[in-house]
Image: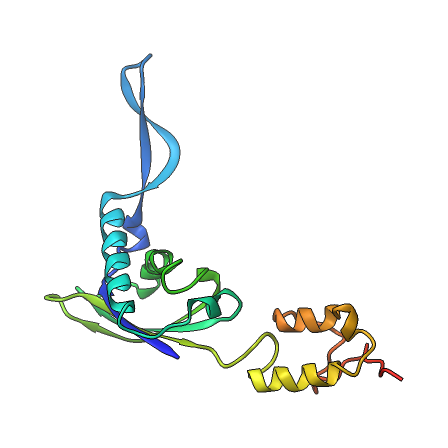
Length: 189
């Protein structure tokens, strides 16, 4: 399953946040509050990205619920407005904008820049978002299911085995070796 989106080029992280100022009645001057807020341009572009993503997503088949527990690839084809821009500065606003629309949490997004081109007339970012094949520490869902099927004959399985749970969460543990054999395995008699 995958979704393709063509979105406005995000504001760079360098211009995304500004210092907030407040009025000091004693000195009758504006004073920095120490708080960072999103710039007007950042807010504008974030809204444009979100509106465009919602519109384009409506015509495609995507499983939002799947993103709550699994990782996704976000392949990016970036059309910059000029030479010299850093693609890594674009991902903060992009990923935050797509959160709760395309995916539940951007901490599960594996962003990969595939290509950078220059298009000063129409700067944009084209995304191909797809499900990753791996599940937790396992290379695939089939591999995870094979491991869990073996776990079903273990005494720990009926007690919600913590080793299996952690493996599905992607946690490396000394109880599971390189061949995916569990040292805590104890067969039911």
